[in-house]
Length: 168
View 1 (cartoon, rainbow, N blue to C red):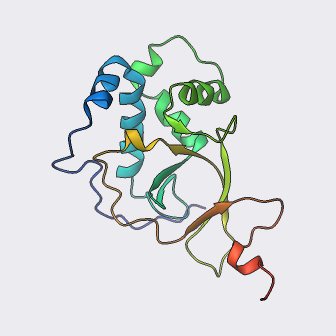
View 2: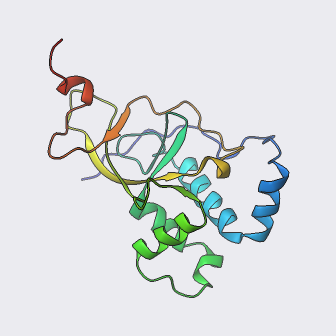
View 3: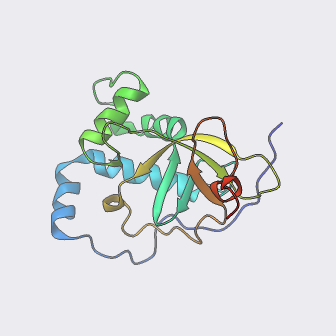
């Protein structure tokens, strides 16, 4: 059973987004992937599920994090992406996005395993996430940042790092 989340007003784009730097404006024109990734992110931000534990996108510590599978499925719904040659599975898509520097990677790691929680009294949610490159997010309004926490999934321990540290 899915619990409905409260609807919050959160515009996906600010009314007067700052002009991107000249190099970024040129990259947007020459690389349509930048535009479709940004449009996909804007779609997830506009969702009432944005910045909720059970949602698909979060703004945390200055970066947009998105549930990898939902982001890929939403991206594949873009008409321009559907018109391209098939990319294969989602992992091939993630490699493609990383090669274009549209997602943040750590070496070859494109998918970030993490926990999401906005209530320490309940078990956190495990998420395979992508971090969207900051160069794509100029002008997107994150509303308030995610009120909870995102932290790396280290093994089977799902507790927040502050709760697992040995006493001083």
